[in-house]
Image 1 (cartoon, rainbow, N blue to C red):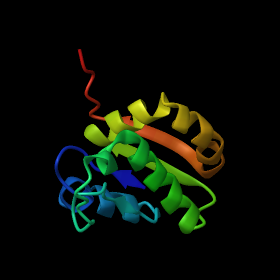
Image 2 (image 1 turned 180 degrees about the vertical axis):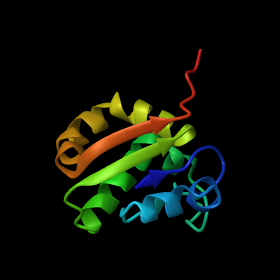
Image 3 (image 1 turned 45 degrees about the vertical axis):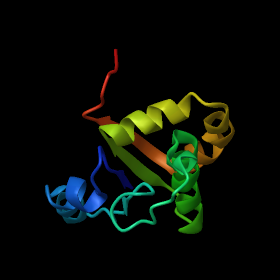
Image 4 (image 1 turned 135 degrees about the vertical axis):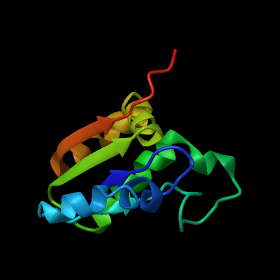
Length: 115
């Protein structure tokens, strides 16, 4: 599963730059996940829907819905920042067992470091 960065979509961030094709060519089934408000996703009016906790819930829910047993999660730039922030919240600690049971690899790239 690929988490896009910035204000773009997984199509722009991952497909347009060849990342999805590269992974497909290596035998991976790829899911480009768009955060709410990006790509073809709904654009909620409630700003709370855009928080890191809700995005973490969405990722875990999709993994469960698809009944994926083992997955590789790659997060790019802002997607990585959301994943890192999510990992330090009480919600993420409760979800950690679910994530550990479903993820074989977690990879961040082009991560913003903050100040």
